[in-house]
Length: 497
Image 1 (tube, rainbow, N blue to C red):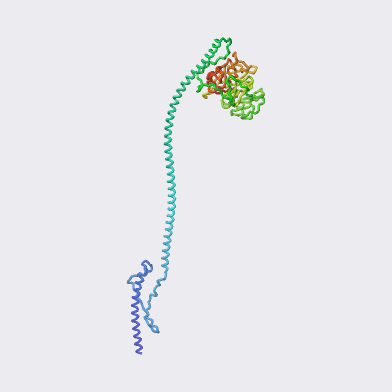
Image 2 (image 1 turned 120 degrees about the vertical axis):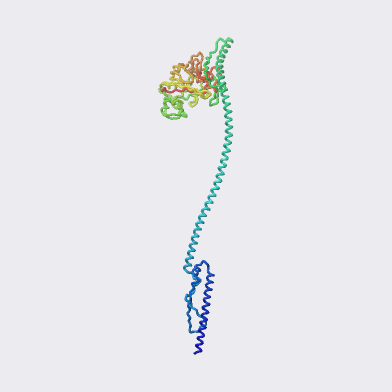
């Protein structure tokens, strides 16, 4: 028993020694392990911060020795602190930290996304600005080129303007020189025209003297020349005795008669006139046409009171409020006025050109009421003058269509009053006051005196002043003299207002 107890006692001391050694080793191991864990763990890790404690806070360990019945082969150490934590275990703190880190990163990502979006918009804006800048540069270049062309054009225009101003000055000086020269020539022409009239009288006297010298017992009867020399004679650039050709290009030689006179357009039942402006009517005169509302000049059908004849006449509505019935018109020499009595009685010519309305038609128009006469004259420099008579009518054919005129007013001079009260004369009916036939010498039909101061139905000469022995042109003695053939004339009547 003592031996056994000794053995047990020996074993107990040995076990205690071993436990002591084991406890000392475990304490050292724990300290070294803590040091290793501290060294191995990251510095910022929360677990590291949690395990950091004051060095002086040392916890004491209590040990309980369990002696099993079985044989103990090694030391047994029990710690009161419990088992050590598992290094691989994830705690709620770690999850919270990770979530915080993730949320922080998410915010950073959103911020970066906003920055990226803003940067993208800025890039697009920069691209648009670059494109607009290129467009502006091209537009500026275009405007610059246009400005350059405009500057060049203005410079050229200024040069041309300077040249034109120089030319205008030169032309102006030339015009002034020519104007003075023209006035001088006009004066010389007036003197020459007077000299021509005087020489015509002298020539006639010399012819008479020659005939007497040759011993002729009878001298041919020649009408006296018009001795009126107006104060101002219309001037043209040339002397001529050319006669205007008609529409068939056949000239009418002076003193000749047409073989076949123009057929009269004034029949009892004429066909509908070509070119008539309206189908209304017929009217008694052009004044009634105007009152009916027709304001356009042209051809109209007329039928005077007490007559069953329809006549076609030209109505002038563009002069003095209109209503003028044109009795006679000369303008281009297209119609020969050297006609017999029957032609002058019925009328002849072209209504829209040269024509004579007819003595019988004029007589029927004039007896409808009180009419006044307007004579319009145009010279070869484009000037128009007029002579107006306060009353006008003709006596019947039995009285030779004697002319009855009122008082004169106008700016053409009174060359028709000397024919007042005279009967109408043609080549085949001599009713003038001259011993010969004035129609033969003046180549037309008119209310000749002996022979008179006007001859509006004479020969149409082109150019104004003409050379003729018997003054057979279209002249108005008080305007141009007997040797100046007018360019155009019109005779018109209208009822007295």
